[in-house]
Image (cartoon, rainbow, N blue to C red):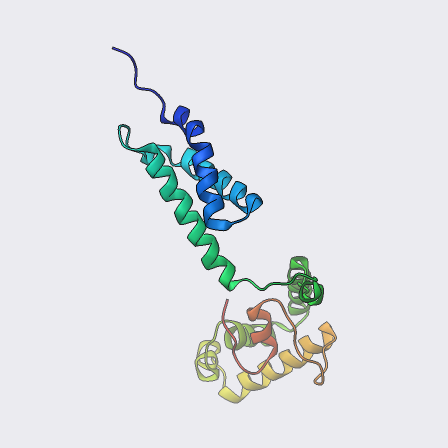
Length: 186
């Protein structure tokens, strides 16, 4: 009794038919070749889902057809930018800026008086109300408000922010600590 053949061995037999089907769908040889390649990769990586003894060509054509329709759906969401004009106007803020800003923020936070840092972290970062923070610290609500306000002003000064410029921080936690309204919490 011979061992069952590996279904991967049969994939190559169907390449011409797959390419013809892909060309009939796309009307473009280069796109058709890409689709056939995508189909082969999907088939190869999911070969355990193929049931030996069933129709390999039908299975491959189903994958190819699904790939074609997935690509069409994706293309509807994409913006055509043949001249590259739209692409040239795009910019992405480097990820390292957030790390650098957070490091600067941590250094500045450590420069605050302990009471101010505590109040600011409770109200600004942890999201507690002034009343809750006052109760936790055993002081009056006005004291927490004052400490928080002074801490925010001191942080803004240390970080070189003034009232006229907008805060363009990478992380919400920093923004919530520096601003009077809570954006999010740690």
